Amino acid sequence: MTSTSKSAALGVSRAANLPKRFYKDVTIKHEEGGAASLLLDGKPVRTPGKSHLIFPTRALAEAAADEWRAQQERIDPSTMPLTKLANSAIDGVRGHEQTVIDDILKYAGSDLLCYRTEGPKALVASQTKHWDPVLSWAKTTLDAPLNLAEGVVHVAQPKASLDGVRRALEGLDAFSLAAMHVMTTLTGSALLPTAVLRGRLTPEQAWQAAHVDEDFQISQWGEDAEAAHRRAHRRRDFDAAAQVLETLRA
Image (cartoon, rainbow, N blue to C red; front, side):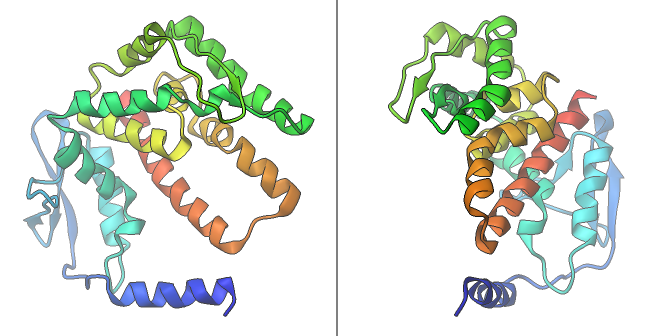
């Protein structure tokens, strides 16, 4: 069985285990402070933790409502990244903001942008082009200069620099922190989503910077279907998180 046919077979098997769609209408209900919640056939949607699924803005609620409207015979959570992020923000981040910030800072302590290859020259040049401006920005704007290393040997980062990154995260609401955490884990970098948060990078620029190494390998050897499928799913989650940041920053 080829990798493509194997993926198709697994997809069919997975779909059979998904819950059936149980609702017809998806509507929005206004909440206090400009927030909005989702209603399925007039009934409020709840998170896995049994809290009401309430979004901080109507725009985000409408975007999540579109995810629910787009479901067919069965409900596929993998196609509902905004809903998944909201569940995480409400059940996992709210009330635990400092823990989430600490986890993001672990990535800053071994940030993708700090680990450079020795070659080939084209890859070195691409890393320099995409990564050095962000590191320079972090140094001057966040007061967070970071040490660089060649290869994968860990290099320690100054506590004062990590404190600079922490200051950029302090005070963020649960939805913004959830989005930052998603983008950080997907990119392996705390600096890239922080640059998006502060408007230094667009989401597209941050995504490209996070995939410099991967894109170089694809340019040399090509990309198989399974890898492309996984990347598309990661990109969907990344874009949803970036949408949250941009909506809340507006």
